[in-house]
Length: 150
Image 1: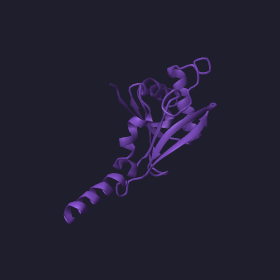
Image 2: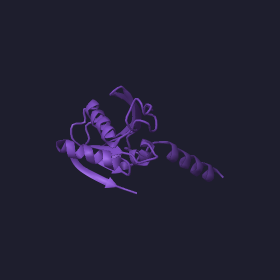
Image 3: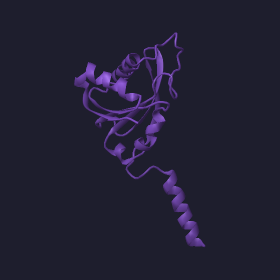
Image 4: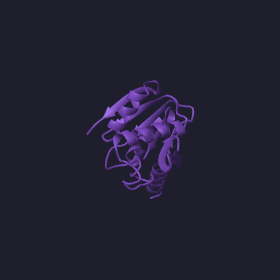
C-alpha cells in the first residue's frame, strides 16, 4: 500500500510541476494602438524569438502545449491574441476594421512594442494572411516563416 501511495504522489507531482529545465509560461498584456493585446510568453529573454500567430476561432491558448514544451528551454516563444480574440481588447467594428491588413499592422506594432527585432513567424490558419503581410512588408525582421494551414 505504501508503494501505491508513493507512486500516486509522484504522479501527482509530475503532472503539476513544470518540467525540469522548462521555463514558466507568463501571461502579459501590452498596449498597442490603444488596444490591450494579451500574450503568452515562455523561454529565455535572450533566446531566438518565435512569434506564434493563431488561427480562428482560437486564441493564443492553442499554443499552450508548445509554450510548455522543451522548445521553451531554447526559444523565446510569444503567442499573442488578436484584437477580438481571447483576452485582448474586443473593439466594435466601428472602432476597428477587422481586416487582415489591420491585424497585420497590430501584430507588427506588437512586435515593435516588445522590441523583438528579428524573429521567426509560426503561422496557423487565420494567422497566415496577417503573418505573410508582415513578412512581405518587413522581410528584414524575419528569420523564417513557417506556415500550417488547416
